[in-house]
Image (cartoon, rainbow, N blue to C red; front, top):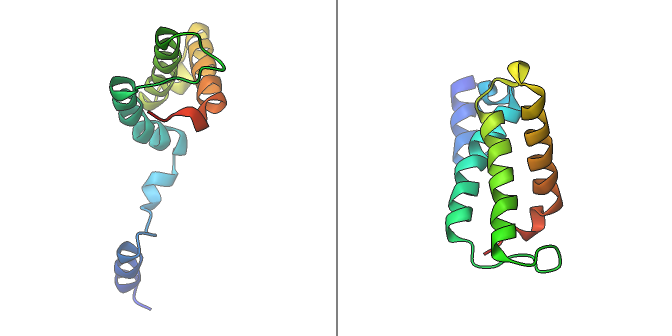
Amino acid sequence: MNKRIRKKQLKKTETYVNPKETWNLDITFAKFVLPRMRAFRRYVKGYPDFAFSSMNEWYEAIDKMIAAFQLIADGKRFEFMPEEYKVMDEGLDLFREYYFHLWW
C-alpha cells in the first residue's frame, strides 16, 4: 500500500504518530502535560483529603508537579544541577502518587 494513503488512513482513525514525536518521549509527554497541569491548578475545586489537610497543601503539591514538568519540557536534562534533579524527582513522585486524584 502506498505510504501516503496508509498515513491518511491512520490519521482518520487517530492512530498516526509522527515518528519525530517518539525520539524524546519524556519531553513530548512533559509538553503535553504541562499546560494541562497549569489549567488544573487554576480550576481545581477539591483535594485528596486523606493526604492533605488544606487546599493550600494541595496547591503546593501541584506546583511541585508543574515545576518538574517544566524542567523536563525545557529539554535540558543533561545540564541539570543536583537541586534540579531533586525538584524533578519530587514532582514526578507526587504526580505518580496522586495521578488518580487529579480531578476537580
